[in-house]
Length: 349
Image 1 (cartoon, rainbow, N blue to C red):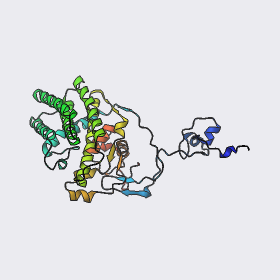
Image 2 (cartoon, rainbow, N blue to C red):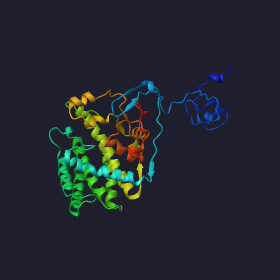
Image 3 (spheres, rainbow, N blue to C red):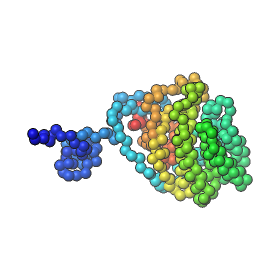
Image 4 (cartoon, helix red, strand yellow):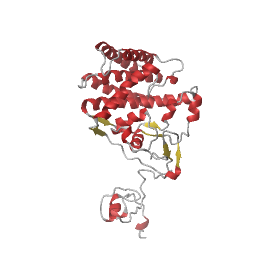
């Protein structure tokens, strides 16, 4: 009995026009680029999985004063692979803004015990030893009145304490201890790396590698489940602290590299980091206020790459200080340069 070839199962993914023309098909949907360019009908035997889910504003929902997002239409989805990206020649004003913003973190911590990545409410029983020690150092640094460069004595102390923290971090017995040592180390680098002379030094290069190691350890050792004794707000603060600490590690590396060589490298690991759209929750000062500001958690997480793209495209309302630094580090743009979002703006996921 002859085989009906029209009913054979095929694994070919190219569209019919590209198969007939013996051309390479990029499997775009609903049309590949070749059919789109030639304005011809594009048909697939096997419909390709979409690279990006189609979304419409009608299905969107507003998630608060800082941002809004469209619910993704349920569909199979394959994200395009993230590439190693070398960003070059940022505007000098952007670099100075990024460096100044990171230099301010130890000052903010000295004054309020809070930064963009350390929240005091995460430690209701008092700051852990590494964080408490670095708080004293931040206060000492602020009281010296130095701007731009630390004293030789303080610089030596910072280097010594940084080495000590590295040893303690490598022997951390719990994740909480690992996070505390990591956050203390990050604050030390804000005072150390970004206050040294502009010339690159082997010591600063070693710090850059160390920051990569911190980010990797935090990501790999973060607990899958949190203790039930934590309130919803404390559980969120812990997870958000981990995410933000990793992001600030990347920012310091970028700021140092941009400040000394005017280029920085973004890796797929950084771009794919989860980011919580509900940035306003970080600054809610009580459990009640936090619960009142809490929106539906569904769809609240995107990648750092998606968030920075949304910022650059002007789809984010009321850009926070943290988001402003992300925009500078990831896109080399200032908040003042991005378009103003409409009343109902959307971040495409």
